[in-house]
Length: 282
Image: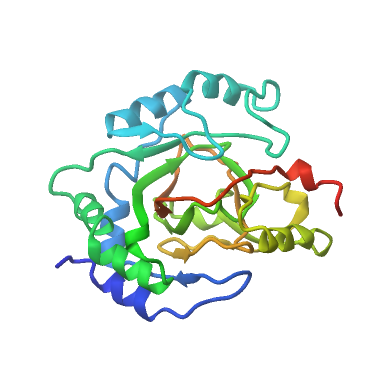
């Protein structure tokens, strides 16, 4: 048993929302007392600093580590240089994105803290059985990946539905800033513009080709997940378009999420085209 078992009931009973694609959206996921305690932890509510270098030092001291993640780099020196002049040197492929950031995952929570209890809950069979059952995913076919993450300024992933290897994903907003809903770092949920719907049709008809990122200009944002203490869960499909473009002062506060996936153990993908292969097909 876990003090967070009430979340299982919320996921079990939540209705599906089909706008702009099939997903589960739950506000007030945690009780107000639990969420207040969670977001007051030093690993989440990091003290403000004066420089990027001081921020990395503080996050490392709290047991965060940069990880490989879409739209980000693990080369901290390169990122620090870019962040000083973000529109001069562009060391990554900038043909889709204006920026890039760093994603750091908490490696170990303080012994006995609520974050340690939370980590145990999100790694539990009860949680993953509940999430997988909601989306008809067979747990024998997948492996889990979950963690508490911070995403620094510049983090950007252009619209995409996720690759076919991903079976399920969830994102919980756990931001410590009282004004977090107004900060420009939230996930967009999108639809292709009518003149670009041919790409989704192509994915429907070619299930052995992987999906890919596309330019922002090819989609319209339908809504954003701005609410704190909210979760979105979905099983990636050809229409699950989402994106992020973070532009904010991470020295004061950081975009913070509990993030998790189910990944298929085996893939049937045979080819991996690019958006460039479809740019002239409109």
